[in-house]
Image (tube, one colour):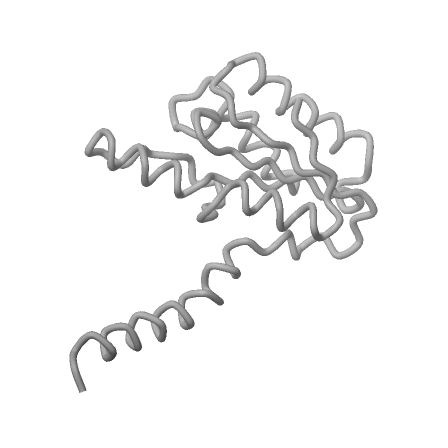
Amino acid sequence: MTRRPVIAALCLAALALAAPLARAQLAPLQDKPFAEHKIVLQLSDNDPRKQGLVISVANNLMKHYDPDKVAVEIVAFGPGIELLKPDNANRKLVESLVAQGARVDICLNTVDTIERDTGKRPDYIAAATPVQVGVAQILILTENGYTLVRP
């Protein structure tokens, strides 16, 4: 037996084992079993007005509905991850949303790209939930009954 088929078989086995782990990172919120309304807010811009609007929409939803009756998830990717950096002016507002039961996701593909381009991994707040692919997280959520809103 040559080495090439053995290496190919090992690669396929590794992919088969990794696939369930990748899917686990894309799971929708599980701690809101009684949510009657499910909203995913997309943030892919580094525009302070858009950041403020996303935060405002999430806050308004949390106030309008009983926090147990609404699932709000913000997915930040690309330039949108600026919202989740420790020095962002909106940090306390984001942490307040998370404390109220919202979830804020950060795209690890974006984080990895920044690290590759700059040589330094960007810091982000502990309240952020890392997901491997932000857009895939949005897709999974919409396939599970979430309504996508891009303010």
